[in-house]
Image 1 (cartoon, rainbow, N blue to C red):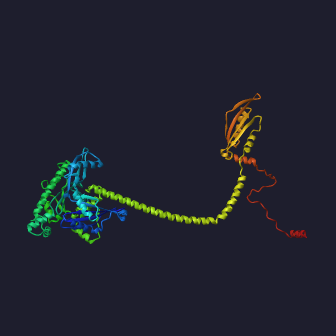
Image 2 (image 1 turned 45 degrees about the horizontal axis):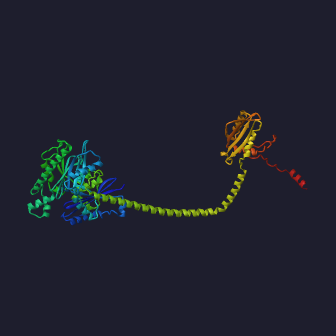
Image 3 (image 1 turned 90 degrees about the vertical axis):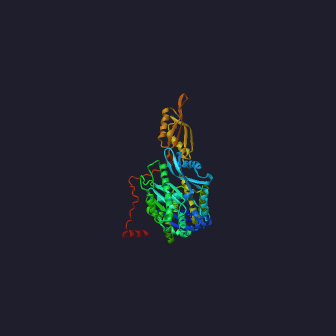
Amino acid sequence: MAKKRVVAIDIGTHTAKMVQLEQASTGTRLINANVVTYRDADDRYQVAQALERLWEPLGKPPKQGNLRALFNRDKTEIVLAISRYLVSTKRLTNLPVATDDQLANIVAIAAEAELPFRIEEAIFTYHDVRRTSDATSVELISTRRSSVTDHLDLLEQNGVVVSGITPSMIAIAEVAANSGCTKPTFIVDIGASHTDFCFIANGALRFSRSFRLGGNNLSEHIRSALNMDTDTAAEEKRRIPANEAPTSAWTTQLITELQRSIAAANLQNETSDGDAGNNIAGSESPTFSATEPEIWLSGGGARVPDLAAVLETELNIPAVLWNPLQAIEQCADIKIEHEQAEVETLLDTYGDTLAVSLGVGLSALNPAIQVSLLPKETAETITQTARQRQILAAAGLGILIIGGGIFGGYTLQRRQQQRSELVDQRLANYAQPMAAAKEQLGRELALTEMLAHHISPLDILHALSEMFRDRTQVAWTNFNVTNLNVPETARITFNLEGSSHNAINTLIGALEHSGVFTNIRPGETTTITQDRKPIFQVQVRCNLTPSAVKTFAKKRYPMPDIPINENESVATDDEPNIEPPAPKTDEMEDQKDEEDN
């Protein structure tokens, strides 16, 4: 079975992350990972250099047109994440009932009026299709085309061709689905500049938003409050607890945004499901009707000391730190395998920040997830390039087959020629005996032809004469034979004249019982008057039986009767009965001597 490999890349504010997954018959494996940091995300050259270092563990980017790629069954797909804050979502309701093929066109028409920017500047897709008997609703996901092309240009500078772009909230939901997420769960992924909030219920993404608050804001709070440089503040934020100043001010802002997010998720859940009683727990609604929800914290900003405990107290919802790598290894058929010691160190250090990149890779391996913001023209180019590679591969394979056929044909022809020459040589050795045998066979065939009996019209006339002995009663007036050289198809025709109907019928009966003639077909009997006597005339057609040749041969060449003396006994044994000679005696020898004298 061919292996499918996916390289997933997440370009953040200060870090770029990469994971490589491999899917085979035994399951999914994480076989490589890398994280590269940079200071200024606005410096495109700096980011491009970081992406080049990010790719180093994988070697050179796969070339799309080389011969090895054409015939390699283990394909590598490269997918990219796009941050939630660059994405806009909106649920489109009351769409007409339609099939999956029709729905794409319906969403495209409805999106023109719902997009937050001009249609020519947008890239959009949809997911979370919900159908009723009367209507269909979907969640529209859109982004600016420039946001996508900026990411693609950075990777293309390093020769990396992307085949899919997955929004970060879709990636986080996929990781949660593989992490044993059974309860309603709020996933809070705190990055450097933004925080992604996702609500997962019944294994599906129900709500998501992004707000501008992250680790950089906390560093700025500490830098301003303690009057220190940015690098020192970044180190200090890892030691100050969440409920202590100056970190507490940042924590308060985070709690406020989370309360707003939970309230929005609750409203979205009520609007989508139409069930006002299915509330989501929060600071103002502390209970959940079915199951108590949880908060999972991930990302670099989640490492603030005591942050989970403070959020649990303030929001009245259980909160835990979530390491997606550890979670999926425990709950899913996904194994983390690597040989490099530096990769193990990297996973221990950055494992809790790889939720997005890991989810992008898992989404690419899941055929049920088709959410991608890759520009249509780019996707068509990739498809066309893949088709061209297939054509080139087929052409190359055809050339190999044709070349192999020509070489094999030439080899076979040479071998057949050698065998033919050997056979001709052996036949030449048998030429003289074969010529003698052919001459002898010709003589024997000529003799056999001479001895073989051939029917002649005289044989037929002789047989008819034996049947027409009384010429006063019946006679024939005409006789015709055709195809006599092939007795099976010979046709005999003759006319009969008889003194009465009875005489003609008697003759026809004799023909039928002769054993020589068959298929007797008498025609219509006519009557004429001759010498004041009625004469009956009829034409008879017939054929010869298969045994006619043998019968005529016996009559033409009768076997002679060999007389047998009644007093002589005929030996019936296979061997003749010959008595042995009598023994010689002395008297017989004396008698012979006298005769000689």
